[in-house]
Length: 472
Image 1 (cartoon, rainbow, N blue to C red):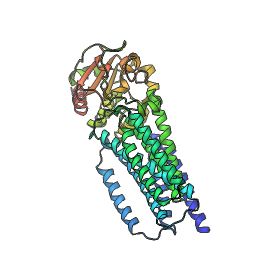
Image 2: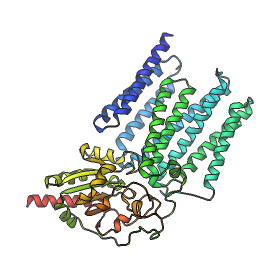
Image 3: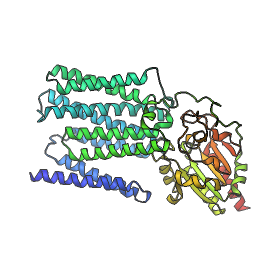
Image 4: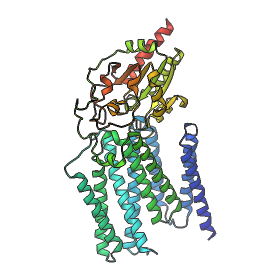
């Protein structure tokens, strides 16, 4: 009894550290400490679990710990910041797979007579939920990974009756789950278990298919939430309190983050998941607010001339900054502009990039002062006072169609009003559409100039102009 009290007390300490760490992650100044606290909490949970008397053989546990440590170190050192979105998706997927394996292992232990559950119906229900949520999370995350890594097209993939087919499969999983929980026949239970396991794996793939690249941040948050819920259900299977708490924290935080991002896009979650947004290029010129014009290129030298006279400058970063790894030269340009007498800010949209907080992470990596980061609602009221808005690879989050074109799929989505600045300089690799497949009407406005090429090289050219001015 004393041993059990000690173990649960350690789990409570670990849970408190998880909660404190999660809270600290909300601010840049405390994020590093919060991450460390959460890590310490997880270390306590692992050590206490390994010392629990229920562990009778450490051979495979040791193999798993060593293999996991080596893989984690390799990922931390080798995976670039540009690959973080797909890395997060993959980690979510493996979390779901781990929960599925726990559920399957418990199913076969019960079937083989190794254990007899005290509450058979409850145990069968949590096994069903663990396998269902874990399977959907695994294959859904793998599909998201393939889209983010551009192994598959970022466009939504749809077919006639897709939502009906998905709904039918979901009903079939519920029916199979009910048969598994309620049937006392071992053969029926085996067939039902195999049925909902297979269907969960198919559902994960087909549910993410109709979601376009522009909605990937929401998908990542939702898959993260599902991985937490699967872990929570697995905690009930193995009667592990800290796993239940940790799973609940991940699950609820993912739901909250998804809701925040849906609000930032002015779209309900159901629309994100089932609308097929970005399945095909939007028709040009259909809406009353459609912009007519032509792309107007600008050179790095001319860009320097515009910025040299600017006194209010705002950077609007997007995924293009991540691709070119331009965050360090962006910070360098910001410092040069400040020495030249300009006030510099960075406008961050909640869904910029391809995962939640993507731009914040990149700018923090480049040591951009946190005080210069401004949220969308704070920068829009003063955008008309900006001499120059520098848009680095962003697309939908600055597209005026969201405010002006009722025919646009993103009409009504809150955006950063970069088009209201006196001059807009858009850095872009080419003339194609963004990851969501929508044309950006900002590029056609009279006050917009296009600086084509790799963002890092282009900005280095602008910085070189300021350095030459200083030396002269």
